[in-house]
Length: 228
Image (cartoon, rainbow, N blue to C red; front, side, top):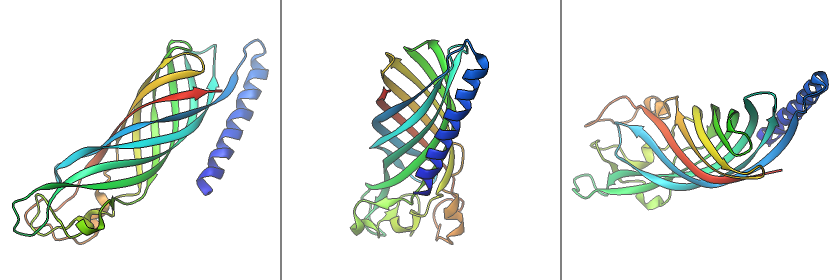
């Protein structure tokens, strides 16, 4: 609820400021709008600690846009909600030679202030900017696999690695193609922060593998947006 109220406040301020700018410019029409976005995600954690497999998830949200016809860019503020999935290699028993990718999920909300570079106004734009993310911990899809032993470690269990960092900062690069009110888009989110850093504070048994944890999230989003 706090996040939703913050988003509404920021959008209101954004609209107020751009309306004032439009009045000052006089001859320049600055237009505010809203867009709804949805799509699929390919999520991974780039790390040497674990063997991972990309998982398919989903994403949805909306953003407020400010169309600046006298500039070579537009700006937007978006809020996205996602469920991302990932497989991490593990074995069912301590001395087992069997390896399986067990499934984890992570829920996240992102606040994205972005610039939209106009390659072809209203048809092709490039998006770039930061993304501020709050996410939950890793959650096992199958609770029965909590005791699986993580590959690369002797006795580190699947349940041990769930408390990942919950506040992350990402960089965003994307492209949108289409028409004024409908576009297909692809975006790439790269995590600048170490999303596994919290595991260093868990006093885990790291026998057999690296004692320090480091990983950066990698998310490819493919979807569409409808603008109003």
